[in-house]
Image (cartoon, rainbow, N blue to C red; front, side):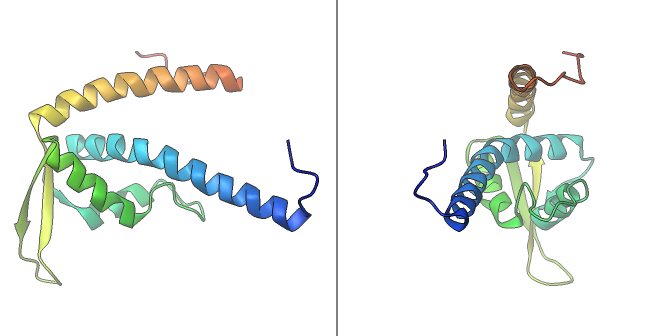
Length: 137
């Protein structure tokens, strides 16, 4: 319910703020899932900017779901938790790059998280009145 004392501009600002908060919270959980999935599918180690550009290819919206700056803390957290490993290599064009690979523990975690994601997606689709387009699990 909208506060009747709010002007149209205040209501719009409030909605924008709520949208940003929702996107941030949604993004936090799926960023780790997406990173593990991308690195699991890769045949070679990848560095942060390379991953960010890959994630952008499918998201041509004006407000990206996952911002570049949000990837690096998640990559570090995944590594600290043993889900990724990394190595630093010199770069011909710029500063050294940190290359990431998924670990065996990361692969196991990814499998569990995909199952959780599919269950969650089905529930939300049902609640929102949508029909899941993937019945493979």
